[in-house]
Structures are given as structure tokens and as C-alpha cells.
Amino acid sequence: MSDNDSQLLAIVFDVNPVWWGLKTVQGQAMITKCLDCILVFANSYLMMNTENSLVVLASHSSQTKFLYPKKSGAADVKNDGRVQKFADLNDTVSGEFKELMGVHLAGNDIRSDSLIAGSMAVALCYIHRIERETPAGKKPKARILVVNAANDAASQYMSLMNVVFAAQKQHVVIDSCIIGQDSGLLQQACDMTGGLYIKVPNQQSMLQYLLTGFLVHPDVRQQSLSISSATGRNNDVDYRAACFCHRNLVDVGFVCSVCLSIFCHFSPICSTCETVFRPPQVLAPKAKKKKKS
Image 1 (tube, rainbow, N blue to C red):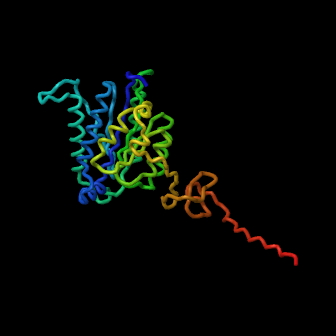
Image 2: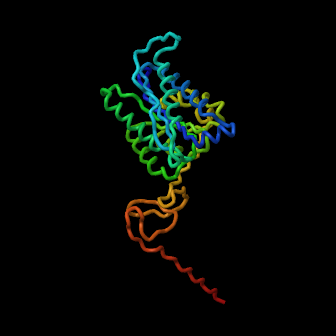
Image 3: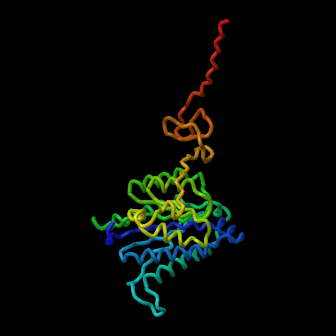
């Protein structure tokens, strides 16, 4: 990868109010400090190359919101001494974030899980649009960085796998920075697209992990440092699938031979394609041969 190659980074930030509210009450994490770390990381990323592009999305429990970009002028110096480009990034993200978190949502819109799969799909669509609008030969190298906090939702398994397959086809790398519990779904997404999965042990070290592991492009990442030893990459990927009936992760299940739907228990009729199956036959135990006296 040469120095003149431009990059396009899509940051998906999990802003689930339920998870962050509990962690704030417990004194373990604060969403505003996490946002500050993301802004420092985003500014560092833009300073690496003037041709780099950035998009920041907030993944809420009920919606996905663009925090950046917005229309801005040329890069110059403001009266307060800040460079226009970086000032627009900080002010726009902070303003849109305050507007999102200040919206009064109905009780049905507040859930413990976030729309991570939907937000990643929006980021992938944005990347695809930018690539179509860019002349041939100048397309940026695109990747998605997911800053995840809330726990996995097995109901999003199929949606997330579709996003991963689409990212593979578009050659988009998916990276994950995990603040809460380990995410088996994002482990699969990172492993299948050649991305990096890092679980941050505490919020105080989050900026260090962002700058060390995710600042450079995957093409030069292995040349800059030993990721596995320096950042604690988890190589044990959980490839369990979620069943279609209860959305639970299963080790062993029943697979429909027609549509490949997965079920944790046998069903005579597939709920997806309505194929009828015969019940599994129980093999009779073999009679033991009598020993000749």
C-alpha cells in the first residue's frame, strides 16, 4: 500500500442507552469519555492522509443516525486556532450525538440490544455509493470499525451474516473494538473479512487500543507491530450459529436440507420453506451375540 492511497473508514458507535446507563451507574464506563476517544482517533486518522474520508454512525436501540459528515467549507484556521476540518468533525459529531441522546423515545424503542447489523448495512451502502461516485483507479480502500458495547442479539444473526457476505464481495474489512462482553457474531465478521477483533479490558486504555490496533490499514498493520501479542487479539473464534426457532446459539442442531435453516429441536415442518420431513428413525440396538460355551 503506497502513501498516496486514500482510505474510507466507517465508524459504527454503539450508543445503546440501556447498556451505557447501567455502566455509568456502576461507575465502570461513561459514553462521553468513549466518544472523546473516538474523536481523537478520528482526528488522527484524518491527519495521516489529506485524501482520507470518514463517516461516523451511531447505532441506537431503535435507529441508526449519521453523526458525520455534514456540509463543510475549505480547511482553514478559525479564530479559536482550530483547523476547520477537525473543528467541523468534533462539533458535528458532538452536536448530532447530543441531539440523538436527547430524543424522547417510547418504551418499545428502548431495548438492551443495539441495531449493530442494520448500522453496518447502512455503512456498507454508504461505502458502495462513494465507490460508485469515485472515478476508476481512485477508489479508496474501505473498512468498517465497529465500537460495540451492548451484548449480542441472536435475532440479528442472519442480518449480520448477510452484511458480512456483502462486505466480502466488496472487499471491505470489518474491525471490532469491544468494550463490553465478547461478541461471537463480531468475531465471525472480523475473521471472515480479515479484520481485527480486540476486547478492551477497561475504558481508560481504549484510546491506546484504538491508535495502536486500528489506525493503520490492514495491508500495513502486520508490518507495523505484532498485533496478536501486543493487543491481545482473540484467535478463538466462536462459529456457532443461531437457530431460526428461538434465536439461540447452538453447538449441534437440525438443518433443513432445502433452505439450510437451523433449528435446535427437530420439527416435522420447516418454518422457513414449509418442507415436510419424516421424523428421525430410532435405530434398534443390535442384539449381542451369545458366546459359545
